[in-house]
Structure formats: C-alpha cells, structure tokens
Image (cartoon, rainbow, N blue to C red; front, top):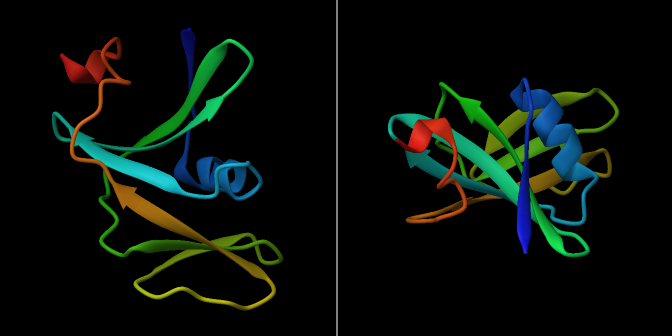
Length: 105
C-alpha cells in the first residue's frame, strides 16, 4: 500500500479540513523539536497523510473550531454549542508514518 503526503501551509487550513473530514480527531507528535499535527485517511489502495508543522505545542486537549465565525480556540473540556466542532488531540508516543520526511533525520 502506498502512502501520500499533503502538508498544509497553516494550522487554520488544516483544522478546517479536519472538521469536514471523516476523521474528526488530530494526532500530535513531537519529532526532532517539530510539533506535527496530522490525520491519516485510508483511500483505495493508498493511505493519505494530511499534516501541518507548528512552532506552538497545544497544551489543551481539544481544538474548538467555530464554523460560523471561522475561529479556532483551545480547551481542556468538550464544548457543545451548535456552531462549533470539538476536535480531540491524541498524543502519539511513536509512529513510523514520517520515516521519509526531512524532519525525521
């Protein structure tokens, strides 16, 4: 099975994508001082890895995206208003999905 990579230019675009994707959670790992936030989506015969690098490490457990105001905030609690999507951040200890990426060397 092949793997493709898609890197977003900024965190906001990445979160907009995640909130409308079939995978409504974000995985986080720190690789060689890089904070990498990513999701993997299984396609027909390939896996696509969508990710963004960030200087900032998010300390909270959830990303809150308000679809009507197009704003992003962070929280340690799930928020349940009708305008927002609450995206959990899953902390990854180890992964091999970035073996071919430059920041892993």
